[in-house]
Image (cartoon, rainbow, N blue to C red; front, top):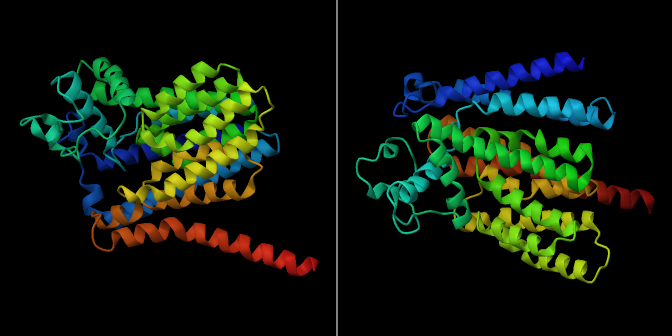
Length: 377
């Protein structure tokens, strides 16, 4: 049964990877020959296919989690599933749902090719730059921390043979951070359920292995700093916490909790780590909800709180919210796929499909609590 399930899961990922190339821009070097206009000419069908993939990915996800609980799947099965997931999705087209990877490439090119400061100079200022033909947000300076800008030098120089090599070198960098984060969750928790909850979550694999968002790099450094505190390596823990902040500044909101952990560790008192992860998850969830102050809530921002939710799986409310948001946030892409615009009524629909499942969950918790109170009194 497991082998058949793994085969069907592999086929699903292969079909999803193939589907991603239907969104290729005609101006993309080499890959432009695959341009079909599908996402612009058959929007209703694109929505149906995308939703089908999301639902099937969640069906497999739930099956895997239940199988782990019943001890049907082992650590060796997990390794096989990770190999399948990465091995197939690595070859997906990363700009199906977001163009951020092109912005990463453009920013690195401003620094390493044009030798200009990406915090001052925008990509659009270089007339004739090939990336301007298909990237979005070319009129913005670098939005991320200097550590991330430095890290982009690795895939930039690995891609010296051309754009496609650069593109997949960036994807490889994100894959390595994903693997590192999965490994850390295992080392921290020693809980196979926590590892499955994180590593095969459809939102996480789409936003990291497909869309290649750098939030996973921020989370890797953050979790590594917690892990180093566990190992009594406080100085290195502080270093990696700072690295996390200077990848993407969001981590700074966890500074009070991190300092609290450091103080407790230096006093040699016992740290209740599940409680720390629980509080960290709530703080990052708050950061997620206030992110529209800058622009809007993006699905990949869920990477901020999901790892902590899965490291504290006994905290039912946070875990339930995380699972429901994982589902709702992937639906957030549907209004844009259908309309082709972020204007008009699209933002309202995006918010509705994102938060409707969460609202239903919260109503359920409230009704359940009231009912139990009435029943026992």
